[in-house]
Length: 323
Image 1 (cartoon, rainbow, N blue to C red):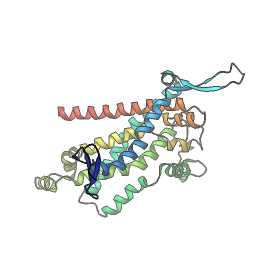
Image 2: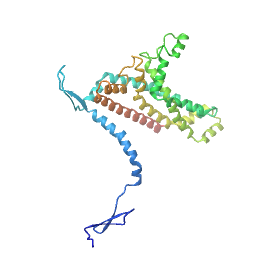
Image 3: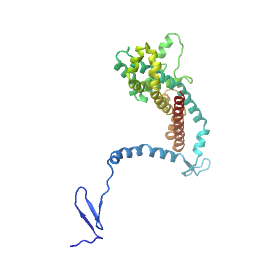
Image 4: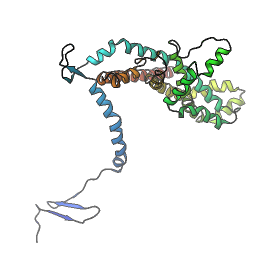
């Protein structure tokens, strides 16, 4: 039976199957191997990063509208609110106070933590220190404890009736010491965060120190340089990239402060539901049943985090280029 050019004929079944259309062979298209390899990551990345962010931005432009007047109950509906949620965020004194509290926290806590992390990394990199593996694990161990568990552990050390620290300070004549007072609770939270993250930052800086060629240190020692001069003239300048990286991570983490104040909120009245922007967003979403306003808070906080992190990076780059 003859087959005309306008009909289809399938030939060579199996791998590399060809389809004849009008007498011209056409090979079936296949996805490139790198596309197949990256497809699972792309799907998961889209599901857990751009989509949640886009949905939060979308919800931030909505609000609940009630048709009732005064105390009369009525039906509610979700309507488009424009930028009213954002204007409410910037006019909310609770949000402004919480943001100022977090910025003060970061200005004090981040430099202190990075100084501790740098000193520990330099000590581990020193030739005079023994048992480096043990101390490296001991310094990094607090990072392995979840933030909620760490806050619970430290809360027992802050409670006056249970804390051995408070009892010891009282025994040496310091009187009544309150780690959970209105003026001290912020720095108690800073102590928990510093304890948690110093080892993590130390490991990043220590990795940068290990990447420095040993010949530089040997040449410095031959020239009579002390360990202090090696640290200040060679080591610290050459790990500036690691210091910038840990600084950016710390800025992002500071603006996301949530677990520690949320845990301490259950044992002291000096930590309110608006203590930090993240705690405020959580309260609005899950306690006050106002997810649209919470989404606006989250978007404002995310944009502020990006601006601060990017601004810090630009300032460091300009200073590096000027020097």
